[in-house]
Image (tube, rainbow, N blue to C red; front, side, top):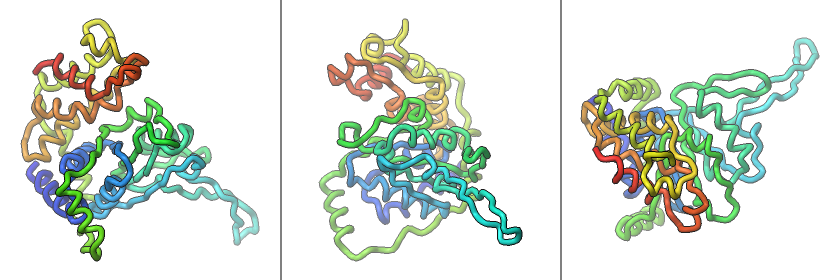
Length: 320
């Protein structure tokens, strides 16, 4: 457990060579990494979302690919396609599968909501199963396999909402906010001066896999698991749910949210050097785990009720 906490410090130190501030965002990114979960990063352009994920791949010495999602991107552009080639020995022809950028360790799906749902869905099998089916054959993806996607706010022009099934595959959604005035001054200083030294690798693939194995083994009491389940169940607009939830939600979080709360709590605890996950860890993970799994109804949209407001109501309703 101490090894994971120590690794966190080394990774953060290297990331801060390029990234100013964003401590909470980096913590959630590392929670997703070591909990083997995918992450969705939401914020307006220019907040270093892409740079952060690219820098993480450098620090971890993992294979990295970036896909810039555009309205004309096709599913085969992501997964790969069969090409017809000539066989020199026989003079005949055969199909050969050319792997797409999805075959990597860390995939940056940049501006994922700028492409239509059909292409977004091409990631679903890879995110859920670690496999890709193309050309009638199924190909396994090498572990670790993580998708970190960036997304512009949905009210921006030229964006498409992600399907609920795909959103549920993301362990967490991270809201990336504007830097403070002091941080922005430092950002401008760094980006308008000669480039500094790049981040140095601190872990290799085998070390990452070993550290990922630690997270499921973190002890967690039954009452803490029960609290995570209670939060997820209270988000469903049915009898027994808070009035705010029944009034403003069309659908709540499913069982995958309960699993994400527990895994996130375990990863958070061990990254902070603690040997067991507590209720405070579950509650700290609730906003990131639940905000993209709550489906507001028309009344919520009309009255501008945000997921953050609904999560606050959940935390108030479900006491430790």
